[in-house]
Each structure stands twice: as structure tokens, then as C-alpha cells.
Image (cartoon, rainbow, N blue to C red; front, side, top):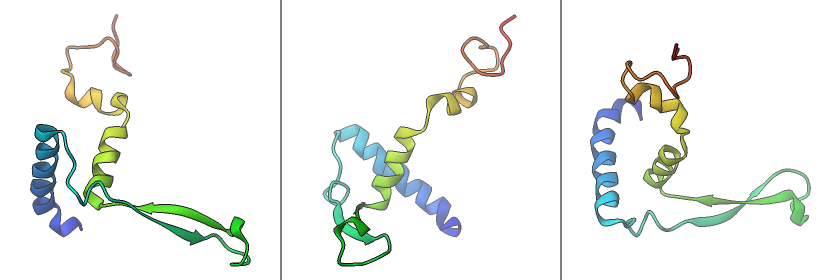
Amino acid sequence: FIKRLPFLKQEITSIYTYILKFQNLSKTQSIEIITLLHKGGSRAKEGNWRPISLSCSDYKFLAKILTISPKNILPYIISEEQTGGIQNRDIT
């Protein structure tokens, strides 16, 4: 994965640009497969299984990006001159 990161970065950027432009996910991004995962114990007991959904990888990346807390990235995108509202920046 890491070896392919430069290529993937370009491809993923193109995918997300498309999503933003057309406000629509591709067919593969909007499909999930739900399956059961055995937690342990007797396989005959319903309580020993849990459902998981399998999603397209680029959809998972997008979901992760959208759920990152803004406070974690704001210090990197707001200039050093701005001090108010940014953790560890003194306003006095």
C-alpha cells in the first residue's frame, strides 16, 4: 500500500473531486455487503455472531476523512498569526 501511495493519492483525489462535483457516489461506493462474524463460543448460538458491513475502500477513506475532528487539522490550515480558537496558541 505504502509503495503505491503516490499513485493512489492522485486516483483518490480524482475520485473525491468527482464526488464533490456531482454530489453522487459511484455504484460500487454505494454498495455494502453485510455478513456475520463469529465472536467465539458456540456457532449455533445467535448471540455469538455480530454483523459487519463490507464497504468499498475508497468509500471508507472518504468516511474517515469526513469524521476527522476539525480541531485536529485546523492548526495546520490556519495561519500562525491567528491565535484565537486554536489550541496551544496564546491570545495574550
